[in-house]
Length: 349
Image (spheres, rainbow, N blue to C red):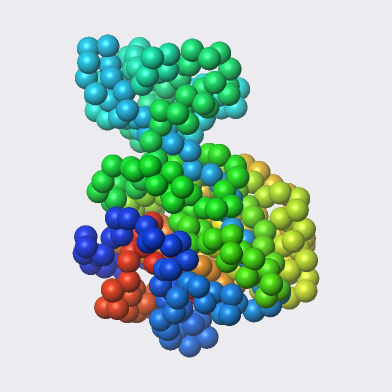
């Protein structure tokens, strides 16, 4: 498929720069899969749009304050964005993006705060650097505490402002558990504890998977033939409890609804063979879904609106079809929906 098929004009004014005052006050565009019709609703109506017995599957990965601001020995300012630990055997060695990268050859040392430093120990993929972090508190927890204390919320590059204290709470789902994401699973940002209670009262089941979102999620697709795009890899985990819930739902012919593209990526990665049960799993996924590669597990999807030419938009088109998604996005633009991470959402079902 051609990259131009996933392009559209997104005015800067339509990119949400701040969250709404209330998480669940977002608008929601309902794209009916049976008819391709678009219906303007509110996220607060979600429990009534779902079916009793539906299984919602969300990503419980927790965003950590991955953006670090420091200085080199000569005083030059450096910004570092931690991506992921390349090896559990070396928890202090992180892969990171840094700017200005040209000033960070191997051996360069960065001070983020007194007692909290990093040394460049090598190069990573796609211009990244490998950093060995050190804290004056000699333990893994001491290093984690230093990142938590001195790090900033890693807001996406299209949010043209610095992070604010409120972002620590709002750029995080209310059910986040497992730390590891450098970007939020944004479809989940709309949920509140009260919404989870309403869903349970309606007989809608809830389970979680973990996928640690990396900055590759923002990497634009540049290959004119999208099949040639080198898709990013992300770490995931499916627990025994979640596998059992998925198996029960499939056996009972109940609908499996993914909360966001990250949860959908896990579900499609672990999709069992026809007639087989789901099994616990953990590892890395490089799954790339686009039209022509159909979903095997996810039957309905809650998602935010995604950037032009992005792999996430291609995944949405794989779920609902390219032409219906193109029409839905034009409808959302015409009706004033807010786009991207802090924006409104769409329900495909």
